[in-house]
Length: 130
Image 1 (cartoon, rainbow, N blue to C red):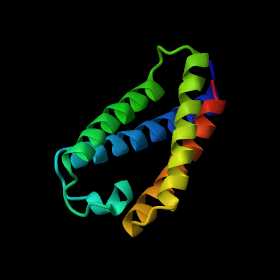
Image 2 (cartoon, rainbow, N blue to C red; image 1 turned 45 degrees about the horizontal axis):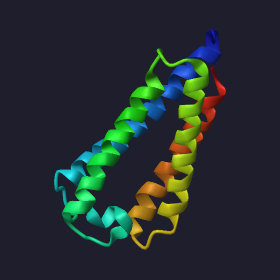
Image 3 (tube, rainbow, N blue to C red; image 1 turned 90 degrees about the vertical axis):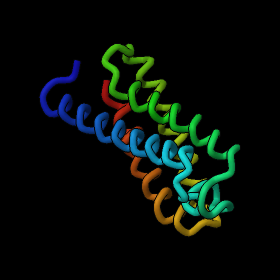
């Protein structure tokens, strides 16, 4: 069990990552509910409200992000399992940096590339601390 400054760092990094993943989940919930933010998602191909199939995909993504957020904060997961989850989050967010960076949508590049980069760094640092 980490103690002192290391434990506080772990706590801060895990909480910041969980909040970020929760924010992604909230964005996806809003898209699934019909909020007209299509220009900032899915390559910006559908300005306004997303079509039904992408709204369904957003609902699924919201569940995944919310689950990852909960897993990051869970004290019940054994350390090896938590590291696997954090490695997966690091990979997912790293892919997000690339995909958002090459998006034809300016809002998507401007908002989600740096967001994904910060979450990638947080997940990478969080996975190093037991």
